[in-house]
Image 1 (cartoon, helix red, strand yellow):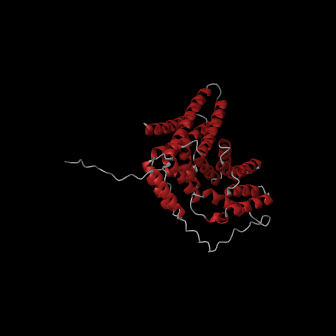
Image 2 (image 1 turned 135 degrees about the vertical axis):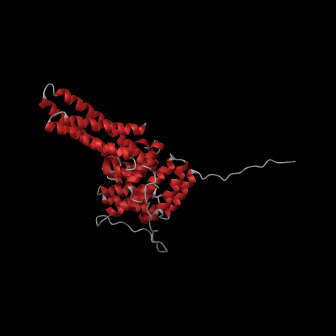
Image 3 (image 1 turned 180 degrees about the vertical axis):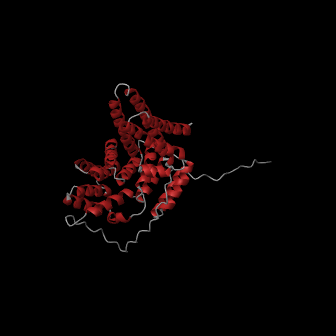
Length: 363
């Protein structure tokens, strides 16, 4: 009697297992190792929302808002109708001082999950970070009503009230939070990302507390509180942002290139009717294209334009196209100043070169 041999392979590590390892490393303050685990998980599942959201949280905890925002936006794209990626995206936007966008995300969280205690208290705290006011206070109260036994809901109410300088309410809410969970008093000493929100609100309240709001001391522990572990921040971004930067610059070159070519042709035609009008029109359009190009890039890129160009320096053709495109509108300005077809030809040649450079790279 013979039996067929069975081949057993080692089970592959799942994305969730990589995520749990990353959370453990983050709890020890080893953020560099945490993102290393996440990088391994993303190699298996590049669009896993749990890994991307956790990566964004690690970068938020490490005070790296640009990297956090890049990961959070990918997490939102992978799971657009879940609250976690939106929360960390709002945090990253706020840390990057993009308060208008952060307030918009926070408001969308409050509107999308009106009965979710976590969404309401977190959305209220995020809204108060970006644009404090009555809406944030109403949402914080709603979070307390949804989960009256949740210490973090009362902590959020304390933070929102303190930002509005309602110190009596803030003190009562913080006292209630301590009664429900004495550990709230040491929340600002947490290191990991599992309780990232709790630490964030506790730190905010600590920074707001002053003589007008004496903060109650937490229940004293029988043993001294251990010092938090040292933090080892991530050495660099896990996600390759260069592909996104290249695509953004490619679109900018195509938009501006088409504008320069059309404007140059129209200016040349207009000279047959009135050279003065043509020169004035060409100069105005050249300035408009320059300003619009800079504004669009500043809005589309999560980092300054110069930093993004340095990150894609390996894509020499795209970088050359961007610089050519930046100079091309000056040909229109030169036409306005000096007249003649020479500056228009220079503008058209530079714009055509820039467009061909990015189109050939895509081909």
